[in-house]
Amino acid sequence: MKSFLINRNIIASSGRSSMRLEPEIWSALRDICERESVWLDDLIQHIEAQVTEGGRTSAVRTFAFQYFRHAAAETDSVQGLAEVIASQPRRPVGRPPRLEPPRRGMTWMPGVRA
Image (cartoon, rainbow, N blue to C red; front, side):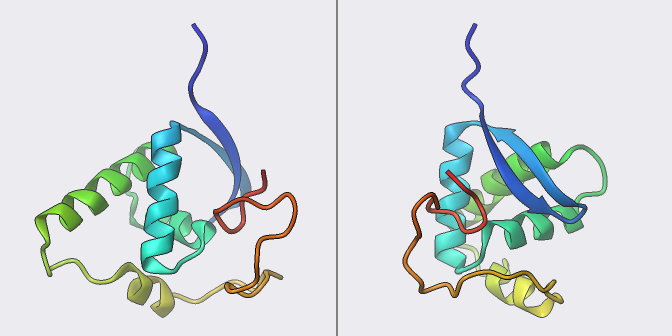
């Protein structure tokens, strides 16, 4: 049986790594990044910081599910993710400004190459 998982490179808390996720999860992550105006790498690192047990991919799937579950319930108890990530120290990485148009070979998620 053919795998429907998509492998992408990311920069996790421990450094460069890769994750295999379903296309729907990658799409959900893209939507979360766009809604919260954050980079994918920053989102992944935020998710990793919250994990106490289990793996990164499981934590990412759970986060995406919970994010949209809260959005559907329209609760105001969830602090804006952009505020949480903005309050955390950023590691220096040479990245293009957010408003720069994508360059050839770049995808819709910052930090992920096609």
